[in-house]
Length: 113
Image (cartoon, rainbow, N blue to C red; front, side, top):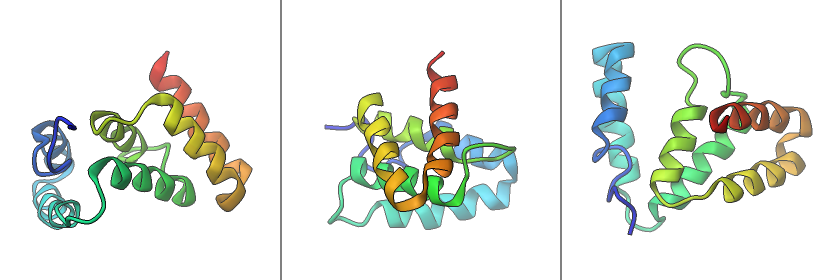
């Protein structure tokens, strides 16, 4: 069982981080994303891995306010391993492009150094 039944609503540190960007933004994200993360058919770990895939496509791994590191942390809190995340990034090379995945690999490496 993952430490959080809902990766958004049960993670106060995540909510605090969103609120630190802007309180209205944080509240909005918590309410809307919390509802989406509360949908019952896809488990929390799978949802967290999907968010990383979206980050690859959107190139959201660098810059201020980027969600990639938070999504990697979230996925790991939901039971994903570094190896699973690396395999996801390899998989995304095929569908999103090698250059997009390269930046994510670089950021992931920095996170573990």
